[in-house]
Length: 161
Image: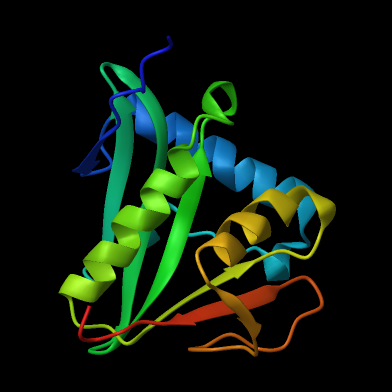
């Protein structure tokens, strides 16, 4: 019987070359799929801003992925920089990170959690993941504008949960 991986999520200061490489891969991939004006992934400076909390996911010494939560207002947040490293896809890393971010959003008292992703086929696994967690398509939020290269999704959180 195969053992379940021991995923560890930790707040990350974005200084490790390993995490920097994963984020550079993430940005490069986003830029290869979407036009420049439609790439909303944050760079390192954006992820280090005070309203963003960034986490990395590890299994021992192996970096599996990452995710971030940006505070939009005292009762709303946005999921940012969700990424699973190529060699660890299909292990449930994304699901683990979404569950963690949802729990953190609940702790912060958010009543809405939103995100932006792409409509292209390459983004279908991400859209499917978010739909499994109850996110629904919505219109632009925060500073976003209508864009044919963006899909906006949101989930209303139960403040009593």
